[in-house]
Image 1 (cartoon, rainbow, N blue to C red):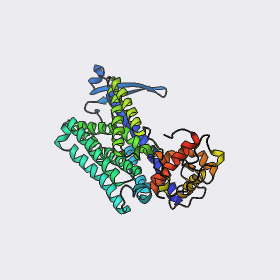
Image 2 (image 1 turned 90 degrees about the vertical axis):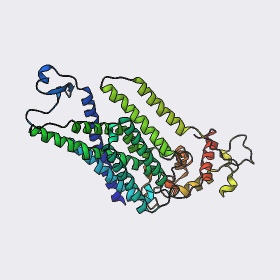
Image 3 (image 1 turned 180 degrees about the horizontal axis):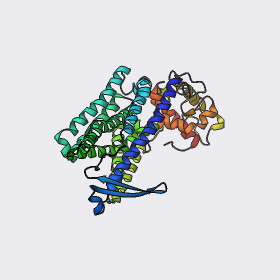
Image 4 (image 1 turned 180 degrees about the vertical axis):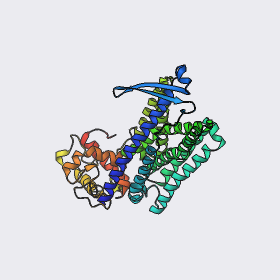
Length: 421
């Protein structure tokens, strides 16, 4: 449905714009709060507990934070809430448009767990709002007074959701639901805690009443939670472009490892804002990301050992023009005709100038494989997506077998005289 594609485009575009505004504001205010310095005495006498000078856009800016509040409430007071609300609303709308309207194509993978769209959607919503409920209960419980214990519990919650998601949904669908939970928690922090506490503070200052220190402390804690969630969430937002992560046999563990490394790297910058520089954090974070990369992408042999008879495909040999010197005529080799047949069977329904697929009416990413010239041009991408990451055909709609995937890898190795990794 073309109209749904256009709707998805505009909602996704708006979601990115709103997310940039929200995350930018979050980063700025955490930086601002961590860089406030003790002001001169005359400012302290006015009730200012921290100030900061900055230069930007050709002008000087003076920022002051009051210990209690201004003597008189300003006529215009800027609130930062709609950045969070619009990001969540547009993100949830995008979840519905892409993963719920298209549940059979994007959310359900029969090889992982065959279920109806209704069941899949119900499970997805349960993970998102059930996780939010558990988080809110934990934040309002005595556990919140013990940061280490609370942090361990939060990691356990996200880990459980990551594992369950990958057991129920496609890899892409699983990752996006973990991201939806994190985004919902972040928006919930603004809606359920930060904004109500700020309203209480404004009302108290306007009425010259005492401010409960717990209002500010609680709101600040939730802001810090959101700050550490930002980099993991940004990874999830782009993860659908990188099937080597969500298609990995242990994709839930890959996700948790990347999110942990991202949060750890964020910790370096938070410490740096308060004057503490620990390069060891940045180095260890980079080493962790490198270790994850090596683990996920470590080369594996893709050679096929006499499995052609089991594949049911013709035992053809390479044309004379493409034979390599010294090839044993009795060895099994994969012909260009075999590859063409595989592409026509499993790929062309989507990757064609006139797709026949029921979902994709335009070739994804503009990749068309109607001719042999097209196949040769996209050969590395074809083999990588079909034989290495194995995320194509999409959700394996055409039932490509492991033997057929290995035939493509063998064909590429024959042509290039080197293993494909």
